[in-house]
Length: 389
Image (cartoon, rainbow, N blue to C red; front, top):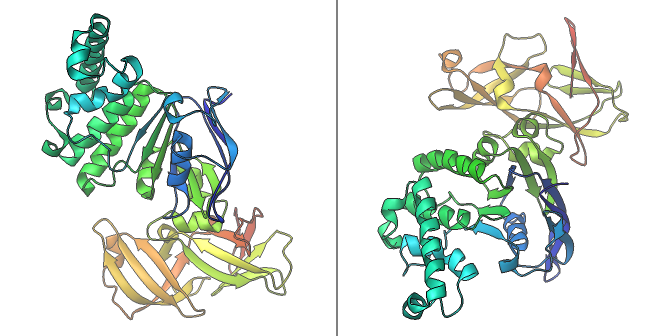
């Protein structure tokens, strides 16, 4: 039995369907990154799991119990918001203590003066302060406990928000773009910290982000949402190398994957420039298909031998690699290649080049965007080699 699962979650606003049957399962201690373009429904899904919104249909199961009808405070779920949602008038220590005080102190016990005079509440307050101190030490923010949010940097506020979430020992962590307000260098450093904190906590984490590099580098599995649907949930490597849908392939990867639309010809072959691909699927001649391949699997090659003739449109030097934008000669389309700087020496805009594709990296999709599972054979006058698409 999974530690956390969503079953057929549906949500509409004013007749607009936002979530369309989203289901996923997470094991204990698993980190799942939920990615997708703006408006795909990922933040709405997170709010429904947290109990801040309600699904029209579906179940949220935590530890084998359906919590769909429970109030947010009764689900034992901790959430870190994009804005961190720290109380500006409270110190870091007081912010971290909030969930413990709300859970363990009586209404009177939470009052600053009255609570301090109630004997039964004094011991609870002391225990809370000890837990806050221990958590602050573990996150290396104990020197910030007396500061208010306005006196801290973005990275420090982020740690305080994480401490407030962790101190309650939740059953599930929810994180809604917690790094989006940090600068680029601090964001990279904070990724490692969050992963390490997640491992210490040992509870399932659902992490929403629009940054695919965060998702691929941090998560055990990545869930890609497009248009309110969960299109694929898999390991970072599988979801990048073996996308199940063309929208998944398009969303992941920088620069974006190369997409070339074509059709099955009368011989049952797919032709891309000077390359012919023989599919072993049941597609009929005339069926539209899409050929896709990532820029890192394109190299400069000699003329002929099935390579794609093209002309350089633009060059981008990125230090460790050069991105080449080339217009194909035999068909309408731009192909992007990522090559080592040494291979780009002497290249110039307007120059004629030939592009060599890695046969093992070519993907095929049908006209619905679904991945074609059939194997492919590359056909040329000089050679024939088997691909796996």
